[in-house]
Length: 223
Image 1: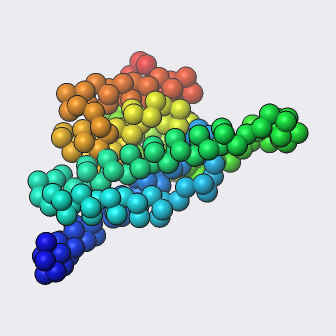
Image 2: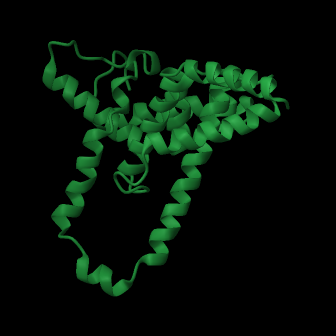
Image 3: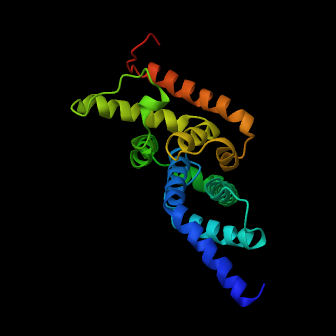
């Protein structure tokens, strides 16, 4: 590839990236928040900036090799998902190798600190803010803005449900209902066959609904 071709390819690539960068950051931050909330990452161990930088570099290398025929959003989110999963595995393995039983026993924090740590992390992980619940569960009774206490309780229940939902279900649900991905684009983003998506979405909705029923949320029809 000559210099002028390289420049055109780079310009085309960054033009494409500029349209999707905000959404990519949003996805990565949500994923990091969830990994932290369930304890797979230590808070601050991985930043969205580092992940996006790695994704952009890998995306550029792939784009230069094959510049056309891509569903850009799904492709970038797939790269981000793979980068995050690789980082989480690597960091967990490093922690496991470095742990010594004697140090663990000596430095075990009080039980109260352990129990509140998850709550503190969960406080900053807010996937439910962008989720339109009336689209996911149409018969859920959503409080009005004036019902502040009920709204806080519902948000807390949704947040806990999403955090503990199987990762693939949660990711598929969020990408579909928040980011607007569907069909082949969604399939590439989550790394599953398109034929399985509807079933995964139904599983995610049913899981969320069941957890909200358990939390005492109200529905317009019998739960």
